[in-house]
Image 1: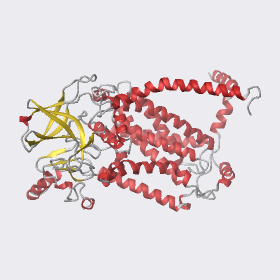
Image 2 (image 1 turned 30 degrees about the horizontal axis):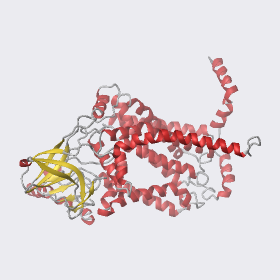
Image 3 (image 1 turned 90 degrees about the vertical axis):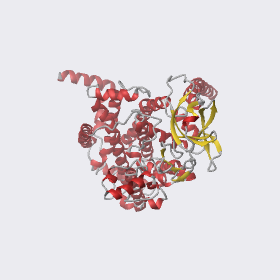
Image 4 (image 1 turned 180 degrees about the vertical axis):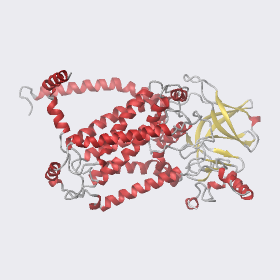
Length: 415
Length: 174
């Protein structure tokens, strides 16, 4: 057995030079300071592989048509062995990827890892982030439940507010004048064929750059500021003191394992939210996006009337462009977050604002009269009567009572 | 760097031929593919008129939600789902038929008869009985269906947008 293995290795060695290739790959040195935070990128890749595998298996039973999509998912969950588990991994894995990719981006930002000579790696990474969001957007139409349907109606309406091309975009995305059979076909094709092809293409480029340039130097002692002309020598010196890739791979493995256990634990303990089958004629449904779109959802409260495209188009556009071009306008030699207070400060402010908007979005008030609920019942009778009028008459749309209430003039919403 | 055995004229010829071949393949494949993808999306709905119901079913001055039935079947899928419409009978065969999607980002508005207002469930849009914006971010009044009355039956047609004076501005997303 051992000799046969050796024989095979020798056969490969003669044809591919396997030994040198593998030695070069696993024993290449990484810069000093490469640690646990540097496992986030490979953790994202690991989760992408889990999504791919579970997605392929879901496609065996899922049927992408408005008549059958919802029932086929119910069938997967109720009749197919391990159906709930496989779908659960895919469902919760999607959210987990967003979290991991976001922290990966923060790690790269705060360590200045997007700077010379890794600008392209950053640009490709931003593409990957957008692709992950598009996977989310196209994926959650597929169950064809109420949430799926109305989130997509909102999504295509938002696309429809784009200047000049909005109406075409609205039609092209929907495949017609309404969210229906052609929309589901389009989103399905994008989700399982087009986006994965593009994603793996970009992942390949991203990884090639990481292998070619290796991991960015950790910005500490002597490496917190690096001028481009000093980069090569400083980086080489840092590598002298660093570990091999094989040693780092151990950290990756540990992170994969615990991340996977965490995903399995969530899948086994949390119920996949599944709502009623999509009903385009319902007028009592309250649409809410996935949690990772809450900040955009909340942004929409702020701009009124003719200013709506500011929230639906211009702010997202400017945000994405600024993100893409970061390594080209931030060319200061500082690498440590402490050595570039302006960049760190702005980034912290942005993340805080997004976290705040996400929280606001998660706790956004319900429309009037959808809320004559627990709270009103818990009040003394005469106050409850008043609450009923307040809710029933729709006063809460503008006026705030007991810390609740909807839009209205912005100042009253905040109480 | 170019090989001396390959004169410039020959190189140009090869480059031109490769460009012509790729261009031809791209066009012959690309045009049908683009049409296949985009034309069904740009086509108007073939079901111009939806049957809303006898006008006697609509009390004067009141809003009623109806599920309107398409008159002509689609090519596919054959079962066309009904379309929800809020109907306001203004009296004297004068109606307003509102599209249920909020004009902000498309959430389904709900009619609250006690308050006599439409409320959007997403970002706090409020509309009055005539569909005018009272509060919140919606950029224009509720969109409407054109309508006609034949033999006492109300029919809903295409959707259009209106301005603050409730005058026609344009067809919906055309």
